[in-house]
Image: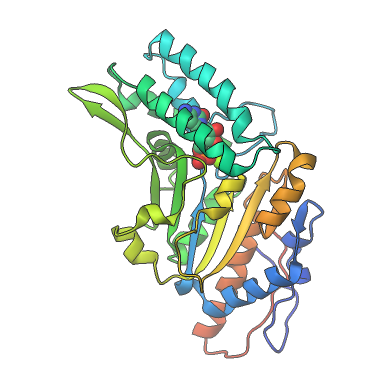
Length: 323
Ligand SMILES: Nc1ccn([C@@H]2O[C@H](COP(=O)(O)O)[C@@H](O)[C@H]2O)c(=O)n1
Ligand SMILES: [Mg+2]
């Protein structure tokens, strides 16, 4: 997994300070001892009890690129398609500029935002109706942004696939773009499932989005109820949740209360104003971190312990990670 190990501990307990990725100055934890406890539960439980639930826009994709180039959201990729009527683009731009500031407003409580988000998704569904559209257009634009994924996203997905840990990409964005981008980046492994808003067609023309509508503040594992994926993950009670919006922290809502959940939040917009809320919502807050180093460090620990167990070494060894 590309991680060095340095420290061996006889009792197998992992100290959070030994995980280099967690000691970086931009990595903030409200309660390091809680993080440490969950990590040790994950390590003891092994990969077979793990699942990962991740947001897509600005979580799997970067919030900021090195060259300052833009990273469009999954809806942004759709909006960039050439054949869309000019009026569609103008109207959907207006919606974006009206609702996006509300979505990321650090002062408005989430309960108040919900109504606005429903309005946004409903209006954009209505706008996305009545004209022909070819998925190949999305594929062409999405292909340009394969490199806008966080650094070491490929390594993270490889790790998860190797460890057979189910990955749920839960996106309130446009699933057609999410699948296209992940597919072109060769990340649609068999353990990856995308739940999102997908384009709907009627009589060869677009007809809004398929139900149920998934917006920033209602996306959680409850949407999986009764699905095959639910059967696959419902007894995987060790969960890593990753997101960039406060609402993303609830993506594992609906799982049994006894589950152990590690919430990782990527904070980039309005850092100072948002810090307190993020610290109170996520277990780990990564400020302007455009990598997958922290989740990879956790997986490296889990894998190391798993290998030791397979090798018949009952005594755990702690690992000092240099990711
Ligand atoms: N019509 C819309 C609706 C939403 N957005 C943005 O998409 C993002 C949702 O995607 P996640 O993968 O982060 O769940 C959301 O943050 C909105 O800003 C949009 O661009 N157009
Ligand atoms: Mg997001």
